[in-house]
View 1 (cartoon, each protein chain N blue to C red):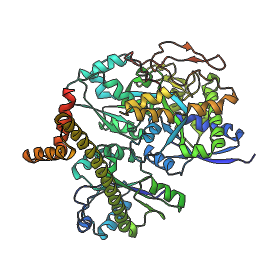
View 2: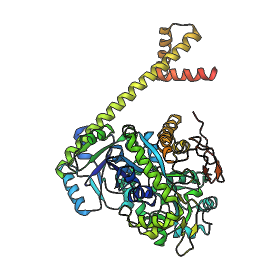
View 3: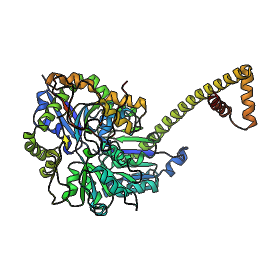
View 4: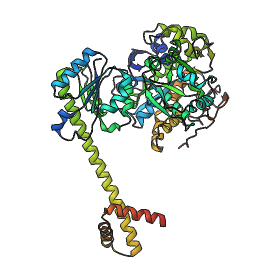
Length: 213
Length: 379
């Protein structure tokens, strides 16, 4: 199967599209020199020049660490994929995008791949002229998923923070016999006085209350 | 009944034998299954193909369905373990240079070996394992965690290249499934020091896995697959069938390994270093006896705990070892069922008769090298 898998370890620099094309570092793991040339040429033509090719598994670990690629291209049929995955475990899975290039068309499979978190799914194998749009799709979709995830995380955090502040207010209301508004103002004043966030003061209060109870 | 085509992924190792035998000796055919065995280049590729539905079922390293079900590594997917395909069958070996450095250690003495390795002080040991989510890696971590002074570095190396990796000095030692350990000895680049069962005497090594939703939607096909594999494993474990099994696997297009490299694992006679007399190892690789095929939920719990799962993860892991399906699907063909689906792992030091439906069940010793036991609280 002439398929490639793409592991993208995205770093902060891929935050704007102008930089995306020029600055991407791409590592190609492939032992067939003919194929390496084809892929590297296609990548260069697409505007990515920071490309390194690697034939030997023994150097993979070191190369990934030193070259710090944003994208690794490896044939799906290459047994070195297990090694590459192991190296990638050092970074979080959610920080990587995956693209699969397969030979046959299969709608169910495409859907399954997308549902499973594959960022781009390409039939007809890997045609060199398609490398650029595919990588762009993969990165864009991945960024979207990342964005959604971080928004979700932020919403969850906000909910947690609110609960903490409510509980801290409750403690103040009981201990000092003050109203909810006064309790909140007290938290705010304390936070401002110490240039801290309200949530940090609330958390400190909760910890202290736990210790004293 | 018309035949059902079933795509089953595997990696060419000696312990894929139950799948090859199920196909070649007609056990699948008897269940009206056309078993299409699809060789996979790596465990990651096999995992992806199963998760994406290219494969209906697959041989997997026992920690893989657990890792996937609790969302670790690669594509998360709910994958069930239908049954265990093989118990034990791996070896730990060291390069000739390291063997010379640590001196003579009796084969299979996990404690002495650990002490000898810890006594070296120069640099961390580089140890090759086939895959991150493998029993090899879990046993290695469990074993070496008893020696806090021993510094190791785990490297993933595709098994067929393990012998080369030792020869090149890329790794100092390795933990690998057969035939790749025997190959390293044959090429006189390494010496085997112990087998996997010297760390855990009854470790589930490979499992038969399928996606949870596939199992739900294809109940009957799953049942027929399990029955065919169960019959194949019974055939494989009968001592009289061993020579023929070696022949069949040696000739099989599915394995492409010569018979002299298949023989050691199947017969349990391991040559630890070149020109040495083979060492007879009981239960070196077990397919069927001692309820080897039964997916114990406590095995899943042990694996999940080694992977660092919390209580919720351990519960998920236990649920993906389908002892319920095993009972339902195999009781009709004479499989003896244990009275419980969990046991205290590591508690058996001798062969022990236990309660079972037919009353014939004898469990094999399952002790860990350090004598500890594992009993995760049942829900």
